[in-house]
Amino acid sequence: YSYVNRQSAQFNQLDRVIPFQGRTTFFTQQSYRPNQFQGISYKAGLDYYLSQKSTLGVLFNGFVNTWQSDGLNETVIRNEAGQIQSKPTTTTYFKNPLTNYTANINYKYDFDGKGRELTADVDYVRYSGK
Image (tube, rainbow, N blue to C red; front, side, top):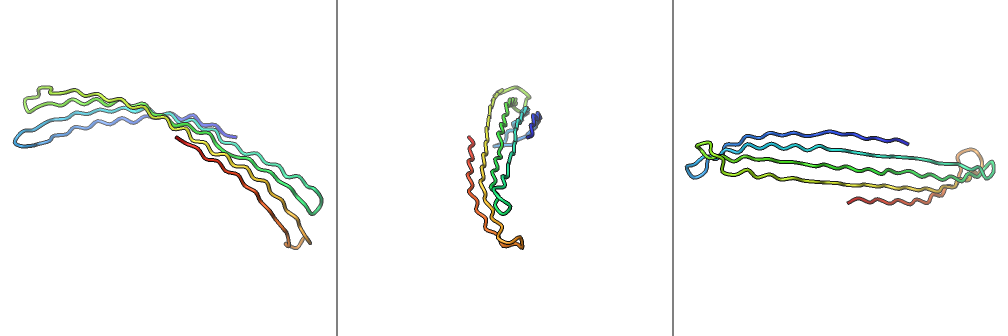
């Protein structure tokens, strides 16, 4: 079993100068995106010895993870004289849950103890995410 709760952030500042058709436009853009990742993973298994030659085993493992990010982007657009022409602001929100479940049932029969054996496995896997 393990658990993680990690927080981080991204900060960007862009200054752009765009000449177009004899005029120059200046863009100053700042964006800030705090991120959070939470994850749980687990694994459990059991072997049951039916006899000296036969073993039945089960194994379960998987994870449940969630990653989310909120963002704010602010831009100031100025003309050649430095006058503000526009101040668009955008916000974003992103949340992505991911899960993975795996189950295994296995059987082993050892014929002679010298490597001759019969094995059988049945697996089930389920992934989901949005």
